[in-house]
Every structure is written in C-alpha cells, then in structure tokens.
Length: 425
Image (cartoon, rainbow, N blue to C red):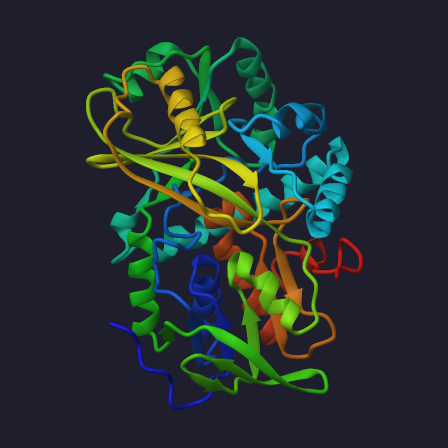
C-alpha cells in the first residue's frame, strides 16, 4: 500500500528510500528530528540498487577499486565483456573525467589510505547493524563469518600476505587449512588453492532487511512516501525552500539527497556537480541443492560473491561502467556462473530462479560522497557508496545526522567531501 503524503513539513526530507536513505532517516529520527523519506519507487523495489544485492556487510572487502595493478589490466578488461571490471566505451565527458581521476588513485598510497577509511566505516557499520538487528530484524542478518576462496596459488599467496596488516587493524582474518574448511562447509566441493576466514564476515538478507527496516522506521514516526518522484526545487538564495514531487510539495528545513545513481541528476538540478558514475552489477539467484555452502563466500580472483539464502543461493559480481543501461547481458551472466562452477564444481547453477541487474553509484576513489552540497546551507548529499554500499550505509547515515545536528562527526568528513575531485560540472 502506498503511503499518504505527510500533512506537515518535516525537519528533514530524505530523497531516496534505498539502504543509504533509510539509515540517514534512522539516525536523524534518533536525534529527535521529524523525518520524511520520498522515493519514486517502493522500498525494496526490484529495480532499485539495494534490492538485488548480495547483502555483504562486515569487515571483509574494504579495499578500494582503484588499486596499483588495475591500470595494467585496463585494456584487457576494457575489451573483455566478461571481465570483473568492464568499461563500455562511449562519448561521455563525465565518464572520461571519472576514469582520469580513477587512474590517479591507482597508487599504493591512495589504496592504503582508502582502505583505512573504508575499514573504519565498515567496522562502525557492523556495530550498528548488530545493535539494530538484535531484535525483530535478527533473522535478516547472518554473522557466521565469511570465507575468502582463492583459486590459484598466486592468489592464495597474495591473500595470505594481507593477513598481518588486516589483523593489525582489528580484522579477524586467518588461514583455513583444507580440513578445517571441510568441517566448516561439509559436503561442499571446492576446487581452490586455499581459503581464509574472516570471523566478522556477515551479510543481510535482501530485500527482507530493507522491508523490515522501513517498517521499524515507520513505527518510530518516520514518514515514507513512495511513488513520489522529485520534479524540482524552489530555491531562495542559498537555501532550498521547497521540494516539488509528483505527490505534492514539501517544505523541509533540511534536505538530504541519498538517491543512489539518481543523486547525480538530482544534484545537477541545483547546479551541484558530483563525480559519480553508475556501475552496473549482476546477481543470479539459483535453487540450492547438494554442494551449497552455508555461509557467505567471496571468490577472490573471480570477484564474485556467493550468498546462501536457505533454499536459494544468490551469486553476484562484475562492475560495468555503461551509463544508465540496466539491460541484462546473457554473456556476463554466463561468465559469473562459469566462475562459480570453477570454484564450486558441485554447485548446480542450472536452475536459475531470478536474474537481476542494478546500478551502483561509484566514485573514483571508492569513498562515498557525504557532506554539504555546494554553497547551499540546508542541502546535504549521501551517495557514492559503490559496490559495498550495504556495508557502508549505516555509518554514513550516522555521519549525515551528525553533520545536520552540528555534532562532531565520528570520522573526519574531509575524506568524503563532495569537492575533493576539484570543480565538477
């Protein structure tokens, strides 16, 4: 059932009811603000980025996309439609600017600094999720650890080399011998060189978590108006006075743009540029059967996530910079499933139940955009959480509430500044 628009004007209007927008609303409401969330779709809408996600959270996977070895793979990946990171060439100045900045961040120094920031966000987010999911949402969070499976000896050696640095930063990452892996995942056939275990690896059941979280927000007095497309803004000086939607106008004291990839167009309406590109990802849900793992897996070299969901298994991967195109490429789907079978030869991937593609908002350095929008005094932005948005959104929502409330932030906001890439048109 579609919610009725609020009769009052809220303290804060959040544009976007994905995982980022909902966490912004959660912490703003906890701080005592009246909050309304608007979205053109429904919560957990199959077309939304948050809906088809594998739901991985926890402290695994904090490395930014821009790493020193990526440029060397660039041309090979660029022309391989089955590569983990594919760029579809097109005449787009925004894409060229994004790629130029991405190349700048492919250094050891930037990768190390990005890892530190992303890990801090992930650690804080995991603590928040454990607290929120301790009650009615307990069945939407699985926290039994996450296995990192390495196909090759080279990949396994590289993964092992990262263990000391991870442990030093509080990540409980360790090697698994084949006997222990067999005890953890009995009946699962692995064709790998070795594996690691992150005991803080966790995952959310999506979209069940989103739907339950929205219900909890409504119970706390947050208004969520669905089917409400933002059509424009009424601006006076340096303040937004009203937000025009397809379901009526709202006059909030503060506005938060948290609309995923659509934040780009929304901010542009206000003359604010964001260094953001939509990155298409795929998930394929297949029927579970013999050989199905019981805990989340990351297939290291293949860049594929495997999420058990009871009688189903969801596998996801690839990042494709192809604009706003959400069409499904059968070749890329086949490539993901072929990767899964190469690691898990006993898993039957033929019984496909659902294929999904969605757009993740990505920045060149993999850090989200969190902060005030340009010169506006009452507009903030929370987007750019990329392929690890589920694991960053809780802490990001808390930072937005601290920013709007004038509270010293838990993490320095300079790392997430909208203008850190220079002036963006």
